[in-house]
Image 1 (spheres, rainbow, N blue to C red):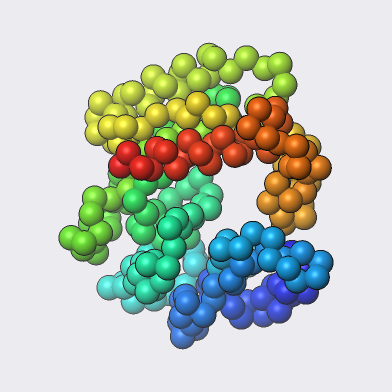
Image 2 (image 1 turned 90 degrees about the vertical axis):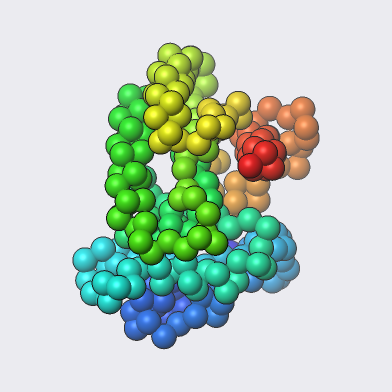
Length: 251
């Protein structure tokens, strides 16, 4: 993705999303990097995939930022997002597993939430805490919502990933399903929330893609032969994308 394209943002923070709040003069529409993934010659490898860049200074939103309490960070973000929302079919927020200020911006602006989970006890505990914190945030932010926004975002799905070869995940999957059923019964998760059939296996290429800052499909040689019947992590992601789109269409 050509690191020199991002060096200025990394060095000064100029053009990163935190500038929406500090100094507070940036417009989200000006921060969007159009067709962000490019080849060596500048060709657009994934046309239509736009990104809003961030840097480590986004953590300053948690402690350093002191804004108008009548305009919390998530409201500022939502108002900015509203100016570009009509330009996109889907807008994805990649949030850490918490409901701190940065995540609140994505949650407040979302229609639905999908939770990646490893097949282990820690993810089950984390999922439970996430739902509890989510309810508290909805109560906190209720006075800032508008009728046109619809209902606050609920969890619509859980996606198992990092599944190692030969590991049976039926027990952790069953426990997660039981917990999800409890939340659905208590109306703390969407009525159609489910554990996705598509699962993402553990693969070295995923870690390599993260290090390179590239989509897995552009890093792995398997991408060229990952047809509908392929059996690799590229196919996992494609099946997940298809299932996600179909799930959204039922909403």
